Amino acid sequence: MQPYEERLTAPRSWWFASVLVGVAMALILLPFGTLPLLGGLVGGTAVAAVVTSAYGAVRIRVVAGSLVVGDAKIPVSALGDAEVLTGEETRAWRSYKADPRAYMLLRAYIPTALRVTITDPEDPTPYVYVSTRHPQELAAALDSVRQSAA
Image: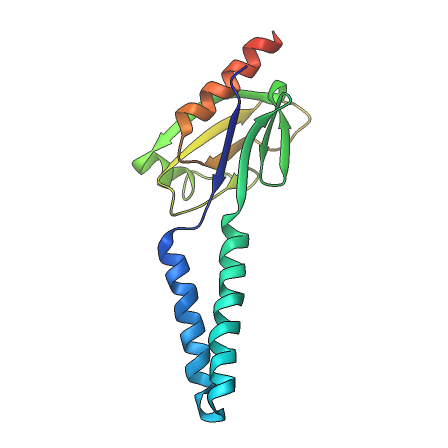
């Protein structure tokens, strides 16, 4: 079995934007003095950094016969074919081709994704869309788990 684990993190530009939020808060509090200015700089930067970190701290794993994507845990036995998406196909499946019933872990700043059909007839979710930087490796890990279970 080929293990797989990936952590999606926010791009560097978002961390720079967190500092800019802190600077904006400092400028807003400038008329009230130096101490509020420093508090706004530190507090605004800290709050923006926490929000950026929380959004970017998503893990994708193939573990114990399941695909774990964010809060979802899907048994590999309920998954069908995996389709690697790049370029225009990635944009198409997260916009006009998207099914509202699908489970989507969507990060627009990641240019590649994996779309995996769900074969469980009891589940109304047609597929799982996962933004990933390594779609080939994720597909190979799912295939490896599927073959070892058979």
